[in-house]
Length: 298
View 1: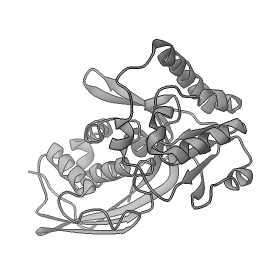
View 2: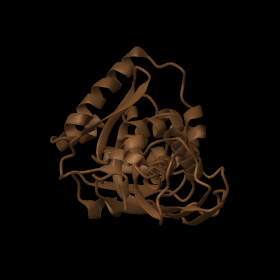
View 3: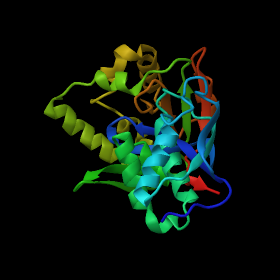
View 4: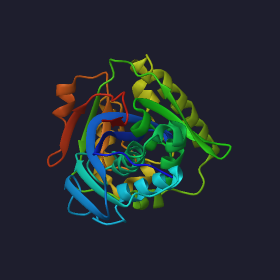
């Protein structure tokens, strides 16, 4: 029978940027913008408290994404608690391409494990990551949210894999967040079912170059972030985003659509102050570091 711990468990989970240009559904980077969550077992009922980013638009019942993820993890470990209290302090913007849903899923599965006595034995990191990626449907945001850093992820033999790679300390990250969002389902709906072989081959080469560029040769980041598969295709849903990406790249800045957009991610080495000054009116810039920790529990 599953035993639950006394007292609250706290977790913080980083924002993430996926794709990074050519690494569609396979490359992701954790960034130093963190949601903080707390959960504890109650005698009965469900209490969900949310403040910060997206607080006005998320449910306070069993349909809340963190709660659903917790329930799935509890099921994996063999039992549900009698009641739950969940408190979310959200910083990651919603529907902006910075991994807010992946952060919620990772937070949920990690919180659930923390609330179960001996949870590490009942659900390994690999099992929790597998569950989180199943819940999200693809691993490119979940992997860096869970493990931190720069992660290459995918699916093999019925399971998800995640491999961390190094990031040169000279690489900086600046994100430009627009005032309105785009739902991932809308952005994905614009992608074609097939692409020319030449485009796929070009993207494969740039994705491989991006791993090398981030891992010690950042002078190649501009070429390495060139994409043929998904960014231009999403322009109807986010024309201002693509205009900013093209403007920055024309000025020599390695800029990409962050995840499904509409946030723009610019990677260094670059003069950060100069980059921040290029933020469009009405958008919000953030200078961020690469987060190497992933989900943290206390």
